[in-house]
Image 1: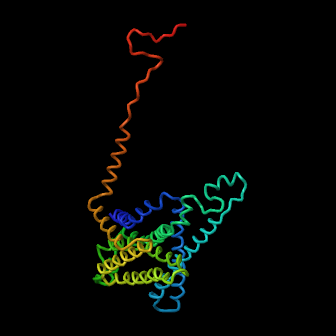
Image 2: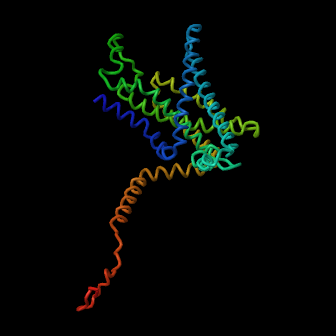
Length: 330
């Protein structure tokens, strides 16, 4: 039963990530590479945060708040470093010249053209679709962050035993603030929110990096990302006091605000965002995606079964008139 619970928690936690990965990343090899590279940058920020916590813990008695701030700053700096790396890759690919021998240049012509930016589908995205790249890289950071956040707890859910029972036996009482049977649900919701937050934060930080030095208000998206990151982390610390419903409600509201702001950054409006949210709820209640999938399957089945009639042709000079012969005189 514990294994079933663990598998169910993993599926529920990463189902939005799988949907985004399938829709925007799976069809493009370059995006898959950038997705995993985003995970690597987040792991580097985690390593820096761990080293900072290890060094501060030997000097200060209570390093939770300082370590939390260092961790958040390291994550945001890793986003900036990732943006700078991709920006340099854009310039190198944009200035790439085909000065090689003809056998090599014929193959490279599929990637770049002389004096132009890359024309390959995946590589051209490096130059044109910066918001899509932010989504891809942010999703990689969010998935690895949610995985590190949940895997120890989910491994404990697999058994044996009950979470919190040894401590209750030692102390003689049960903590009234513990989530109890709702603890798996809390971890699942936290993983979903964390993944989507990383996508939004990456879009906001990269917009600042792209516009810095050209617009006086370019720092606003990046500052909003850092402030919301700190606020969400502070709210998560309140879960230990039993404010689960309040924490998740406020975090979900903050996530909606961040997504709406990202929609404005990408050229949308608040009205279009509200309309899209309303249409999404309507599609969910009416099972539009399932109905579209079933209709597409029916159409494909009908197209396979509908074989066109072959025209009647004469074979070997055959004639429909009686008494005629198909033999040829020597």
